[in-house]
Image (cartoon, rainbow, N blue to C red; front, side, top):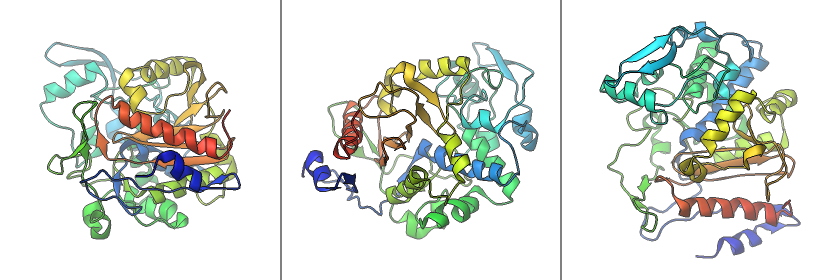
Length: 376
């Protein structure tokens, strides 16, 4: 296999990088540019765009109380404590929940696998999160008053519900009509069983048990999307990398296909309060998170209306205003308007703390900037 360096060198033309390449493990399932992947939390950007489109249409604002639109969310209180047996003490929520809170993860909604208290509550329920209902999947208390912290969680799954409520369409239908079709993208779905042509191009998820061992495909193990019957706006999409890149590129060049220029600009603006920003920094300093997601320097991080935002100029290649995030199976994307570059690297490898995948992702991103002549 040619080196990443040589492949990128051949993709450079007059300082412009135009590069798409597929790598497959020897003996594994062959990948192509038409390969469909579970993109996990990379779903969140598409759902954020869908919500901002509704803001443009005047159907909702970023800062009004939206909890009443989803009764199950409206009744969620704040987790005060959890007994050893997993019984929670919950107090009444005092603050409004806004669309902005949900998009930037400051609503108080958290994932049970990232918070010890919520994990105890979920364990006491003695059931796996539902794949049939967003309400049932995320029927856990909030971790703090909306706007007073930051916790990575299912806020965008709730945003997907709002899109459905306000548009009158399923999130699947809405994204097809308002995101994928305007981009000329036709291989993205929440419901692969309803699209045999898309489902046929999926590849098995691979797992790496030890850092030095190969990642082994295990199609028999259920994944995030196995058996899902509804559209989860925070983690449920399947897509090809070219489809996803079209979305990134549209935001990069600001072509108006998805959002008006003034709305798109909001995505790249810092959104967090000092308290929320402090909580974000703590989350991003976790060793496993550093390997899973892109990670700018501590004082140069905030969150925009779509992903992690670089707010300083101390990084080797990311420039101020660069937006980025990823997905559990080692997908990472970035949009850097200042540098004029964007990209996504996709994989289907689940493993905690995978230094080999992190090294590949970092090498890809750095070389895109270097070949484009955009290193700081």
